[in-house]
Length: 576
Image 1 (cartoon, rainbow, N blue to C red):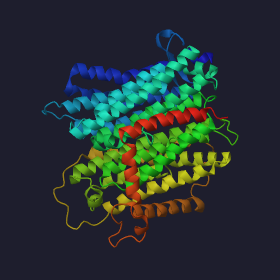
Image 2 (image 1 turned 90 degrees about the horizontal axis):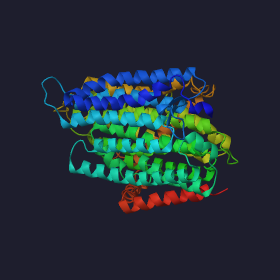
Image 3 (image 1 turned 45 degrees about the vertical axis):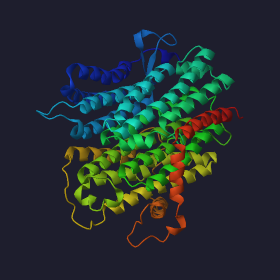
Image 4 (image 1 turned 60 degrees about the horizontal axis):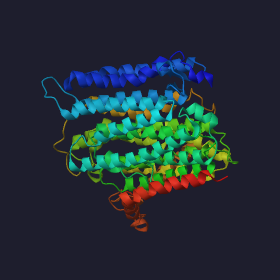
């Protein structure tokens, strides 16, 4: 472990990746509202180049890149560390920030002679703050610095929710902030327990000394529950649908694609790197079980939505569930954590695929709203002709999330399916395939609506930025083609050997068919004008899911769920 407590070649690049966005914030504040966008546009390609340089340095190095702040080694000092997972997330976030920045130029940009806008000034500062906080999350080496980074991320995300300034968005932002702070209290309490018990918060040091004893079990349970609240894993998603659905499209893309990844990434670190000796297969089943519930509830309620942005918001609830299916896959049939690297690789692939695809989908939904003046799903007939690039971005993003070739989600799903087969956890294979069918359901639903012929020619169409359209399409295509870049990494050589076999193609066709049936059964209106024969048998089922979702998103139910998740996790961690 000595190499982790010494600065390495390339370590300064890691520190620069954290500082760059915050330096941009300070420059924007000093120069004023008209300059902050220009500062952001200068820093975005610089940040992307810096992330690429970090990736190149990591490939050349024999271990993680390390930078000791002030030259002090832990536990007295703070170390920034970038391993393979960190490097992948740094690079992906930099790319997504660049894409979102290009899209946001139309909504929050200032042309020559235009008056300064408070919302535009705020947006660019917050985008830089989110970027810097995420970079700090990915490379922080101790749990208290991570706490600071998570709070920076929360307090940058909350104002993004209410940029529109309406009463509804203000309430959504306040709900987000209060529930996220509840999660912060649990996380900080767990960190305090670890410091009191072991005298350090440095993660590699903790990994050497932690044992499955009461203080470590309690800390892991508390910290996990707090981070799940920040990630909005079902049933702790009280804040996510109104926050993501009500924010401007450029802000929703940041919230869904980026903000929730910070707390999820820390759960990954805690379970697989810091406390693998404390984590248990039974508790991992709980995390994946909540993920499976998120996939089912989020997908069903998404199919019931009447607005496109809310459909994408509930799709995020479902896709967050996918990010937690990796945890039981790290364990073998005997309950030993032997598949840790494979599970972590699958999780990061899924997270990057979700970030790029979901950013493109939210941006596309915003463009459709701007073009048509509404985003009512049942009235989107003719949208494909009116806005072909944005519609293509939305549908390609949906296909990427579904896991079709050559998307990153396909590789992630194949890795998890292989792990489920080897470890004998066949039931998670059904969840993975069922989630893909649900995703196909709302892709089919939207596709049938946007390609339908309108009853009358669309009128009062508003102009939208071509740059914004291509930015959305670019991110969606990046998610769809992610496996082309990832296949050269540390993945099994035969992962794509049977990608185009009849069995794989037949499975994909079956998933589309099942998805179409789900959409026909659960959507508010028939997919086809003549009615759908399967709808009577499912009457009221979708309404029950919606009622259940509304109930668990009440404050009393959400707080009770938070305590129950913490208690259940702690109890399962004690099981042999």
